[in-house]
Length: 329
Image (cartoon, rainbow, N blue to C red):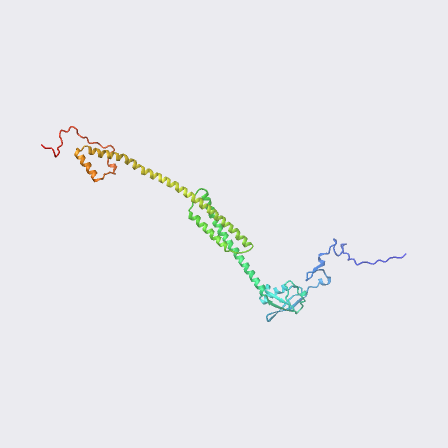
């Protein structure tokens, strides 16, 4: 009977905890993996893990000056740009690095691009990136200024809103306000609306501007309604007062007219009585003079006459007879 020989297969070593190198759950441990500069996830090398990445010295030429920079071999070109900001005075976004006559991206790693100790790199200004950065800075400054202006306008609108509430409470309770106060408040709100129209912006600034415009328009509409109500109240009050004045004036005008009518009748009676006692030829002559002159005298000072003047009696028993020019003795 023959014996069969067995060989041990390449199984992972057993750890002290009774599990495999990948852990008790069958998954690889977190400390067994590392991220390479190229973005690849690989298992750690026990021999390499203990050695830190080497530091290299690169020579960067900017215009006619060379700058020597000590940097990690696994660093990126973007990190190198930030280190060159101090010596060159260029913003890291305005820089363009050339290695072996090829522009390198800021996210590329030095060792992956083949950069070694004492390698030569050329630094140049990037006008396109510089222009983009300046435009972005101007845009941000403009947005900040617009946001600040909207905040100032909002504070002024808050102050005017309190005045609108005050006028609304007075008019709603039946009170009256000066029309010029309502008009001046409307003009102040319209000025704020013009300021908002001059502000341009995107994003949050545009939203804030729209909210303030809607708010100001609402206050202006409220003041327009209050102006109409206040005008109607003033018109009704003026009509009532004018009617009362007309009544009093009419009563004053009717009183002397009613007094004048009986006095005129009494005056006529008195004038007729004053003529009745005269002789006939004198009465005829007086009447003829009045008709010839065509004027009738009306006395307007009624208070000088009594309400019932005394009549002059005419004597009917007179013994003397009047003499006429044609009588002969």
